[in-house]
Length: 123
Image (cartoon, rainbow, N blue to C red; front, side, top):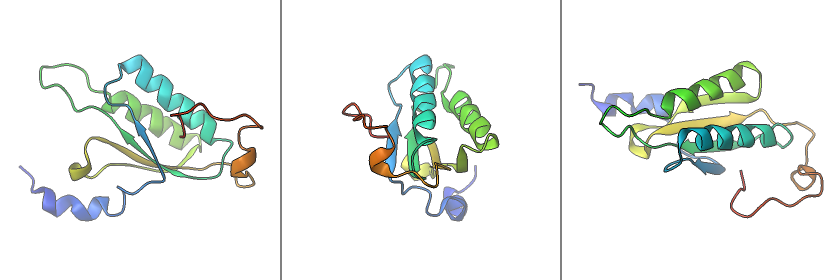
């Protein structure tokens, strides 16, 4: 077993983020849809950091959201939608820390085209 203390330098600074997307308790289709919606919205906003939280595997052989969400984020990074992507430090739970590329000339007020965001969906 690896001592997690030895791994801490790999995760330095990754736990802090401007926004948080909490997918814990959601089923797979809703988790993927929420992540896709967040990525699409952030294409038209200024760059921001987001912490994405997912459920840990249930220990009974059930599927984890780690691989599908991770693959979606990795594909987004390859497409240039994300600047950075990493896993969260073990002490912070299971999930990812991302930094979106955003739109360099976007202004936060104009990012939704005059519409207001639904409450509770600030990412």
